[in-house]
Length: 429
Length: 88
Image 1 (cartoon, helix red, strand yellow):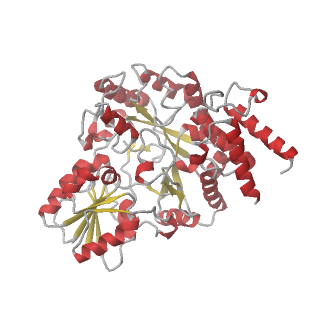
Image 2: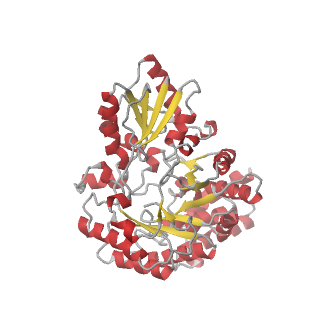
Image 3: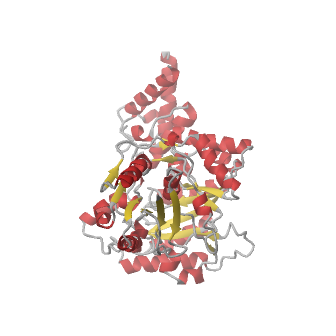
């Protein structure tokens, strides 16, 4: 038996707006696929042959001798995933899909696939394979309980590493510390796709993930803000930093995800420990938290002050804040772009990215905007943070798009990156 | 926990609340005060408070449980419950 794993392509910022390549003097960064396929491959028994196709690197719709085709995709890749599903179904293949979009929109994808996995794939993957072998795939699979993370193998990232060539040679790959989130932020799907219960990978597992990357000459990117939550989560993270400080096992981190509230609420001692452990950059995600949702509205000086404090604290600890700004939140108006640019200049941010607010299916924002009849575009490939797919409150969709492009253009205008290292001038856009 | 240490811990927690709710003095805070409505403690302030409880009292209060707390006395009760668990 053979399983073909497919990661459908999606349009990135510079593909949606090619002028960005002219304006942004950075190396374009084609990142790793998400870990979903690497985890399913790791949980596939050795007697089953596996193949992986990254549709971003070469078109996946070519003949295959696989018996089962398994897709993993998120919203920006959904349009292409459905195209590929049509192709493989015409070849007579059985198809299964999972990932964030199938989890949030199972009815939308069901007509294209023989089976849809809702939520975490690991608890049901063995059943999917067994049912397939019996010729009895069920239309839907959904675990009744969250996956116990201690039981999981390391993700099979070798599947991705083997594909490296040309434009796809990322110097970092994702690592997971935990799953789930108890918060219910407007624009985040995590509590719904991974449940509201926070679960940790053991430090041995995390060390294993980091170590297998280091052995391949790669660094790890940790994208989770949840690891900074006070209490248990921060203890877990500090445990990892302690192991990294102690040395012994080679582990290298390119960046850790964080938000401004988490920078402010985390003690300086913990941030300094992160620095000592080798964390030199934060991927500082904005636009989802109460500080960055209000700081650039012109109506909340306390939020703006807190935003400045967060950037200063990051710099004071020696960690570069690679900051992501989101345009199009409900209180953003015609002055928001100027305020963001002024903030960037006065706070000393050197590295930034800009995105358009996108109501991803399954988020509270999506539910609200559907109810208010403010979704104007359901072309999933345009749900990529680079297009305005909803009716903003105080701006037109065109103003949001123009503002987003202006942010990219003016932020990077005149910035000299000639002395920067390759890693420093590499971003994903 | 003795009455003296109970009073001392309560004083420390109230001082933390005052620090997170800018513009409020610890001596003006009453047990019945509502964190958000009376003391202006927003979600960032609440997270700061949780962080202080973790750092200064070594309390591991889950974020989801802390989010249910709305008054000063409920905050004290929650903190004491976790202190008792830690000492058990």
